Every structure is written in structure tokens, then in C-alpha cells.
Amino acid sequence: MKALILEKPGELDSLTVVTNREMPEPNDNEIRVKVYAAGLNPSDYQVAEYAGLESERKRVLGLEIAGTVDAVGSSVNNFNIGDRVYYLRSINNLDGGFAEYSVTTAHTASKLPDEVPFELAAVVPAAGYTAYQAIMQKLNPQSGGIILIHGGAGGVGGYAIQLAKICGLKVITTCLGKDIDYVRSLGADEAIDFTKNKVYEEISELTNGRGVDYVLNTISPDSATKDLEILAFGGEMVVTAGFPDFSRIRFYDKGMSLHEIALGAAHTQGDFNAQSNLARIGDHFGKLIAESKIVPPQITTITMEEIPAYLKKLKEGKVTGKVAAKVIND
Image 1: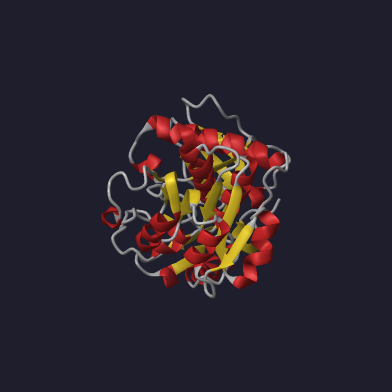
Image 2 (image 1 turned 90 degrees about the vertical axis):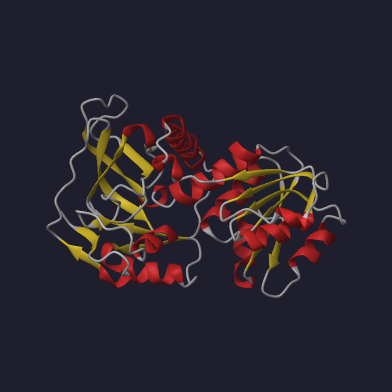
């Protein structure tokens, strides 16, 4: 089968398209999927550049996958051949989405509504599931509150804005100046150009000095630490890129709650309930998209051959929205 393989772990430039990759066979609890589209993510170039991932078989990257079930393991009873599916693959799975066929555990995949195109489904799992778990499962926010979402023009931020609006929140987001109209189109009430504005002073003014009830930080521990300044008393913070420095505040100062998102670790930690939650998220997210309650981010569609170049663009921060590679064209 045709696939984009990582010839040398640690070298992004070693990604090579081949036509003789052995087709993967599903284990008893797995399904094999004919891949129509696969999403590109920062984790793809990060894994490619990590030299410590030597394996007997050359790795196929691609965490976000959408396609149809091609074969089922002997113990699988929730999918049939021909079912439309999408899922977030385990990082330890060597048969990723940048190939004509991939495999995954059946209890982590979700059925894809007919109304949702494969290219759209392929840019949902990593960013969309992260945003869903952050907003809907961790925060479970109260309508009328105010949330700060960093990076509203990115994958996680774009989905999070829409989910926050579904929950009845006022959304303040940060982004580049060129993306202000885009994040407003997603539902952001206030958009701050972080390259030109004093973000925290502006947020303080927008909230009359009270601060925000919720924060979603996808940036860094340093950024999350600064967020402590504008988190209202009793507020909640979700982090995806590191904890804030709690030495900056005293116990009782904030009465805050902190939530960590480690979506992909559900696969690697071996917790069946956490893994099954990925499928539950996908089931609900698919319905939200099919009902047009969530609109897709800006999507750039490319070929398998273009994946290496676009992973480099992604690394350089030159991509707005998401990128989907069309793998099979039937």
C-alpha cells in the first residue's frame, strides 16, 4: 500500500512516500480503516524529530484519521465493514493515518455521521477532542461566565470558542491581528492582538477589574502563570502545555480549580475507561458538526506528497486553522 514513512527517527526530512508498505492486520480488539483523510498536527513533526523512537517497523505518522472500516478483529462487535469512522490514534501505534490503511482499537473509534465529510472529520480528533474535554468535561461552565481562550485562531482555540458559546459564555480570545475577523466569525466576543496589546491590562478593563471565570491555556507554563493575575476568585483554569507557577499566589488567594488535559495519554496509560471516553467525545462531537452547531476551522486540503512541507509550515507557525491530507480518492 501507499504510505508516508519515517525512514530515520529524529529527522523530519526523512519522511518518504513508498508504495510497498505492508498492509496492517487488526488484532482481536482492533479495526482496520481505509483512510480517506488524515489531519496534520504539531505532534507529528515532534514525533518525527524525536530520535528516541526506534522501532522494528518504520513509523507512519498521522494521529487524526477518517475513513471506512475495512476489516474487524474477532472480538469487535461495535463496528461492521463499511462503517464510516474517525478517531485519535495512539502515538505508540506505528500504523498512522498517513497511509492508505491504518488500525486502531475499536473502543476508541467513533462512527461518523453521513453528513460530515472525511476531510472535516480528519481535523477534529486532536484539537476538537481537546477543546471538548476542556470546556464540556473539565470546566462544565455556568452560562453567563467569562472565559479567556488563548490562541483562538488555532485548532484547539477555534473549537473551544464555539463550545464555549454553546455553553452560554462570553469569550475573550487572543490571536494575531490578521486573525481577529476569523475568531469573531467563530463567536469570540472580544479578540486581542497579543503582539500589539497589553493583554492582561485589556482583559482587566473588559471585566471591570474582576477578571475571568475560566481560562483555557494552550501556550506554556509561563503564560499560565500570568493568567493567574486575571483569574477571578473561585475561577477555573484548564492547561494543555504545563502548570502555572503556584508560588506566585498564596493559598486562599484565588480559591481556584485547575484541570490538566492529557488526551493522548489515555492510550498510553492503558486506562480502558479513559480510552472509551475518546469514543464518547467523538460520538457527541460528530453530532454537533452534523447539526451545524460546530463549524469547521479554516481547512487546507493537501496530498500525501505535500505532508512533509506542510509539517514544516506547521512547525514555523505559518498555518491558520487546520490541514487535512486526502489519502484515498474514490
